[in-house]
Image 1: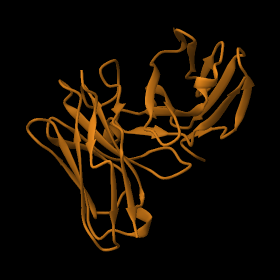
Image 2 (image 1 turned 60 degrees about the vertical axis):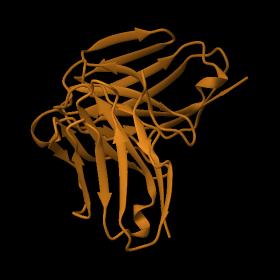
Image 3 (image 1 turned 90 degrees about the horizontal axis):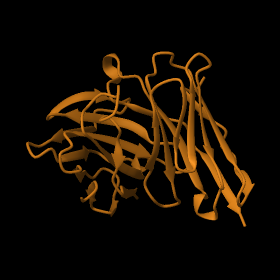
Length: 117
Length: 114
């Protein structure tokens, strides 16, 4: 089975621009979460979507938005890019949303490396 | 106080030794606990999940959870150079707005030398 896929792999943008990152979850998984990881730190939670509804939002500005499509794939959008948005953006897939028991384990895709100049 | 704390290391162990990685968390409502391995330039890979107090073994890996002490650990037996990576501890408090949010520690760098 294919794992979580993300596109693009790498991206270079200029300050003020907009970016869209894409994610396809593991087949059968209904939940997608987005994380931002800067060098030397653990990933930081941005959003979780389950059954196409936003179920959780991290401490990120409104410039960050996301959505989940009927096929459970997802997009993360970032407007008005800042230099500080340069990071590895990770998508994680899980069977269900939440986190109580088996079936909620989150599996990460390869990530999108975003560089803002 | 950080929500999830790990010793950033680096932790250096000889090949064949036991590597012990530790993690503490501050939220007593945390219910689910995970260890991820991240090689340099790659994404995190789930290696263990644990939900109840006690030990859970999977091959060379053993996760230990003590909710009273708010402590979770990972033991790697017979360490191999291929185990050299950053190990990330993550927890979930599935209540309220936290839902399925994974909260990560900063990671411990493990180096296994031949």
